[in-house]
Length: 447
Ligand SMILES: Cc1ncc(COP(=O)(O)O)c(C=O)c1O
Image (cartoon, rainbow, N blue to C red; front, side):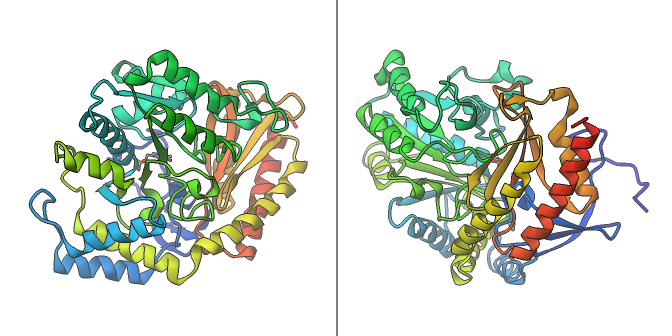
């Protein structure tokens, strides 16, 4: 029986009670009613190594007994040093310093602040503007929401947001320039140069983007040459290139970082989610050596941060998760299972509403449309993707749904991000359930 106790949780949908999860193992969640649920989205594309890994729990418990907290302005711990070294090592030396925070929003905000600080210390205090993209997501604190272009998440809070520039979304399925992959001339990359010139290069500090998008565009990513061109433009105008790898980082796309799919190394990356695989709240802003060196040689201080930045519990978990990913060859596995998931998703194309299937590794999205030829989106009032999420849950799959990929007004999507340990049979089970769910929701919608 569901609990009859008075509820004091302020939920996402306020009058909707979510299931109570009492146990989680591997790719499965178990609720208090005895239901087993496949975690097809790995929480919110977080749980990369799977649920219930004993040794991570043991690492955390051991660290708690050793040192649970020291304040970073006065002390550090060996675990923090080790975690920073391990993160830099996974970038093959592209990055040199790590500022640990407690989540993705803090990581992107810190990235913007570090960019600003770099320019001040480099003798360019006029550089402050941030350029981002529509239908991006960089977090929900006011700064992060200001660079975010996810319309629905910004809407209620716009009076509090900084009015920085958002370029057209990098979204090939609904290209804002009316191009197809065959005719693409990297217009969305070129738009950055135009914008920098119009704003005045001497005022532009940083460009921030997701290499593979999250909920806002359901795993859309620009063509391969895109980030190489972005890198050239950023270099030309001394604008720092920040990649928000909060979702795509730490293995999710089948490489340690999504930027490694492209011939372009960013100046700063923002991480969270997979960095602790969900075992502790942590994020990180990771920078190239030149950024640290410039600040160190000038003001010598980065006066930002939060109480829990660099705490030893998070650091110990980060170390163990990185080792675990390596010991179990899970990044390679993510790439392999990602290919298999992509293959299986193709079987959904025969559904009348499946308009696009996209993504990299185990970060994959499906977009639903009313008309495949015209790409006309479904009526937002139908809440089509939310219906899929609700119906799939009844059948034992948790899949994250989203809407608004079509310029914030319409566009239904779901996003897959299962743990890397998922097997082929489990992918088959998951897609069978989504297939059946989709048929039910389509029938109900009159298809
Ligand atoms: C790309 C990206 N950046 C930033 C964030 C914000 O991270 P957090 O929710 O941990 O603050 C998210 C969260 O979904 C994300 O996907």
